Image 1 (tube, rainbow, N blue to C red):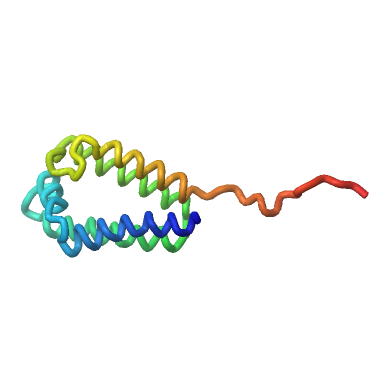
Image 2: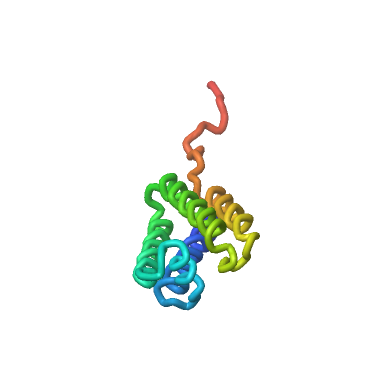
Length: 129
């Protein structure tokens, strides 16, 4: 079940990165980047952000360095959403509610991807013969 949910999280990053930004299927993403970072390089920067999100999807699927991966995702989502909420709230999909959606996503990422202690090697009973 956790593997399926991890794939779902990776799919979110892939859709947002590849679909919305690299392929330009959601033009408001470029508008948000233009508002925050300036119009001159908004196309290039949107593409680079999208490629970064595609890389992140691959990292999630790889399962390598899971704690760092979770921390990077939560940090990026928090940073992006605070900046977007402050500067480009009118362009956000959920407007003022975007922060609530972001917090829910960050919690979901942490709950699904944070490694749990391996208890498979722990003794099940203490018996002496």
